[in-house]
Image (cartoon, rainbow, N blue to C red):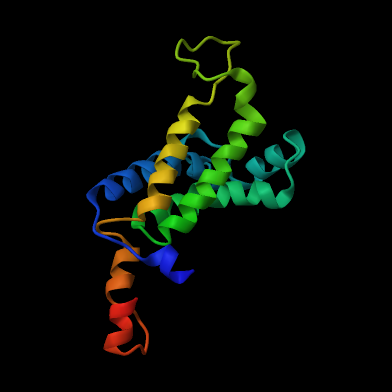
Amino acid sequence: MKRFFFTERSDRAALIARLTLGLVVFPHGAQKLFGWFGGYGFTNTMTSFTQHMNLPWLIAFLVIVIESIGAICIVAGFATRFWAIAMFINFMGIILTSHIKYGFFMNWNMLPDAHEGFEFHLLIIGLCIILIVVGGGKWSLDAAMHKHPASTATPAERLAM
């Protein structure tokens, strides 16, 4: 399992996908966790998710963690595949519970009574799939940890990792 989550290759495309995903999702997480960028902050977001959207407390908490802490970890390339899987599940849940009923397209015309479709969420899911397949890529903490395993393994065992 450790091998799956931390084994890396030096891939520039993964770096681009990782930075794009993390930097696009983090502001949404920061709104929910800190109240930055016009958000409501942790307590109000939890109240909204649990009382108005009827999400279980644990799911509401995980959404906030995945979109904030998870996004930071993805930018840093730490446990990239783990966080990409979590974000994939998160955004599939967002589509299925909130956006699928509004169709594919976003509200590009900013119509007051229109809602957002799920096209943005599909782009996020696509980036997640890339990172699940290839890992964090170049300049990720995963790659650094793989190159320098902090273990008592012999040189032959390190080569086999």
